[in-house]
Image (cartoon, rainbow, N blue to C red; front, side, top):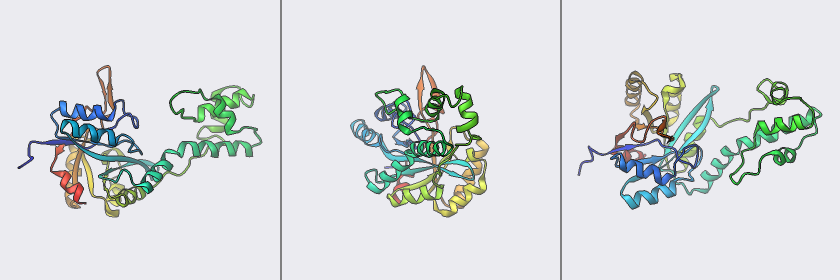
Length: 280
């Protein structure tokens, strides 16, 4: 039977990363919008995938297990989507864990630099100041700044940033992020297909083409932030390299009727592409 009237949105976020909705809600919304399927692609985590798949089985929506991995090349934030990864693969999960630890690694590096500058500060000082929330408190530079004010090293938070921990400060550090080619390799090693997310946002087609040549399976030609001209251009590029053409809304949620990026199904593609993503 032909699927030519069935569509899927291959790029959505949930509460597992920076979206606003439960994974199961994304699946329900896909059904309400008349889609046949949806992918869950949270940033650097697969924590929402299982719940979405269970909901999909309940209500008859195809759920594609996915991920969106944050990487950096040429100082640009590049996002690589992965589909049909083995989301229980221990090596893959450990790698994602390290990606999510970048912030705490940065804190440790900054504190070490401050100590080298003769300032008596420890990670314990910083954690003691961070509010003890029930959720996982993300400790970052504002908390380090507060400790510096507290200890009388600086008078204000602004001075803490200007002198020490802002990007021109004496103790600023930027831990290395992985390169997109590494993310592509990780996805493939976890049995998945790698797709370059929203190529139009990078404004660097040379880099996009280099990544394609490294070996990706698909290109997100249709994205909420692409202009019609960009969609034409990336369609050509995808065809030139015989890549799977994907589409995604990049849905993050709605609050008070206001939608971030686009609603679910805001960009969609024929569900037939799944057989290509699976085959790869």
